[in-house]
Length: 82
Image (cartoon, rainbow, N blue to C red; front, side, top):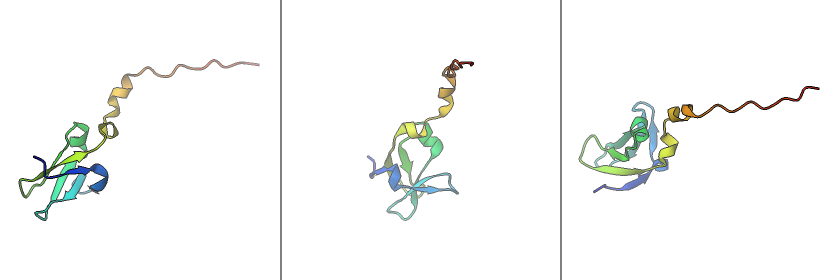
């Protein structure tokens, strides 16, 4: 069972780790990367103890935009010539 449920907005972005962190009661930080979030992962683990938290976030905010490349390009509009 997860130690806690934490919203992504309550976590801190850590440039060095390239991930989101949240304080763990052991004194270290729970960690989850953007890549984990893109893959649908919702568990942030503490590297120093056995605790983990469930991260609440909107998966669409981290979805890879590559799937949008399969869409048809917009069709050109007719231009009236005077």
